[in-house]
Image 1 (cartoon, helix red, strand yellow):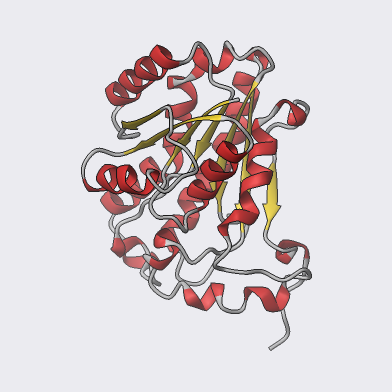
Image 2 (cartoon, rainbow, N blue to C red; image 1 turned 135 degrees about the vertical axis):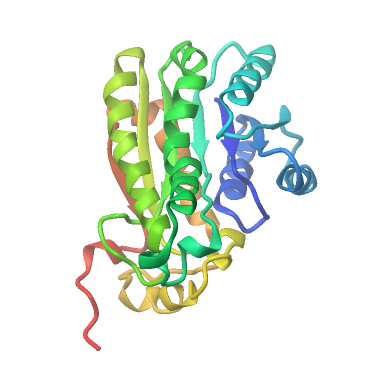
Length: 257
């Protein structure tokens, strides 16, 4: 498969594990991150992967022109894209950490744009390349269960709700072109993204207590194979859904204090 993977921040990130497993299985990978510091980090981290990616490209998902330019660059390497991983999330500090009632709209708008609306932007931007995939294409977006209110998650939770709902509408509108869109609700991983949320340990440290098969907050690789499956033809009948990869936490009731 030809896989476009966004949002690698560190070697502990889920996106890194997806890229690593993809390469080990013989798939071709192109990586993207926003220009600037995040792109410089990606260039360094990419060298630790099992083999060199086909390309490492700068792309700001809030800039339609950059998405178009990146799609053109990807098209210079491949005639189609089989899978796209959306691993992109950002919220200003004032939108997190228990500040829900006081967050300004400008910060909320940025969180929703980067973390939610960008899924639609990527789906449209890479639509032609994915529609050209001979066995259909799969888009996978990483989320954190937006069906409930979490401590400290605040407006990122609302942005993830936009992401999850947008996946359903994209599944509806892109499905006739053979493009499937799903989300994975992963348990908490202590990566750079998780560590940037004030009070994140409140959620992460007790997760395994309610997960029937346990949960290792340092093991991002557990999400990689489900993500690759959803991007593969093996998942050709699955779209518009959220797969929980969280040790079974979502199926359990709240623990009694």
